[in-house]
Amino acid sequence: MLLYELTSPQVANLDRSMVVVIPFGSVEQHSLHLPLGTDSIIGETIARRLEQAIPGQVLLLPMTWLGCSRHHMDFAGSLTAEIDTFIEVGEQLVSSMAEHGFRNFILLNSHGGNTNKVSLMAERLRYKLGPTTKVVGVTYWHLITEEIQAIRETPIGGMGHSGELETSVMLVARPELVRKDLIDPDGPENPSKFEGSDLFVPGKVSVAKPFKGLSRHGGIGDPRKASREKGERILSVIVEKLAEVVGEIHSGKL
Image 1 (cartoon, rainbow, N blue to C red):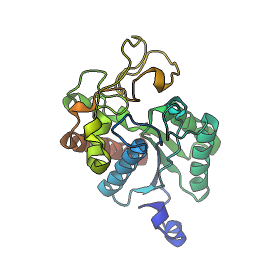
Image 2 (image 1 turned 90 degrees about the horizontal axis):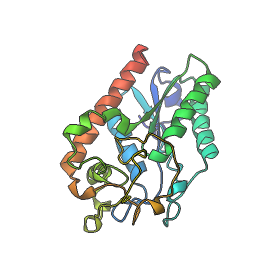
Image 3 (image 1 turned 30 degrees about the vertical axis):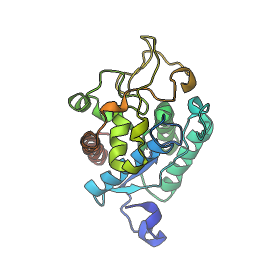
């Protein structure tokens, strides 16, 4: 169910143990070949597929499309929230639904710049709302660190910003927005061994760097191996794992 398609009386009659899914994305540059809304499109696609896979178990809030994208602001069209603003908006969304009696939440993140902020948001809400409310932060690619090895074709470094993974999923979600004629690998030429170089190889240190200094045209990774078939496989395993998260929230494991 999608919150904004329901009437207020319909929401009033919902089971309050239902898991409320709040997706967080971004509007920011995605190299030459992907649209600014890539992260938000991917996050909404995952959320809707989850709802279709386990109907009646989750309530989807609209995509929160303004993310923490300060590191992309050298590129035209990118929009950013400041860190405190982003966290406050997320906390108010959860608090609003908690005020209506809902007590189980997934903060579904689809943008790298939001990752640690969503974790902090979940921690703060745990202490603000008390132990009867569960708030679980999830960044979607963290769910498939093992499964992706059987899907990817690029070596480490190929699945970064606008790389093989995001381009494959966009070829499923909104293929008409993918500029195949402009696909081009990009990224730092001599990265530090301590910095993350791939969605599935996080850095050993935390350092903030603008993307203008990391790439030629805003990408990190190799989108040339992307395919629609690969995108379907990736989406399927993500949704499968998210459904397991919902199950563990209901069972009390999470």
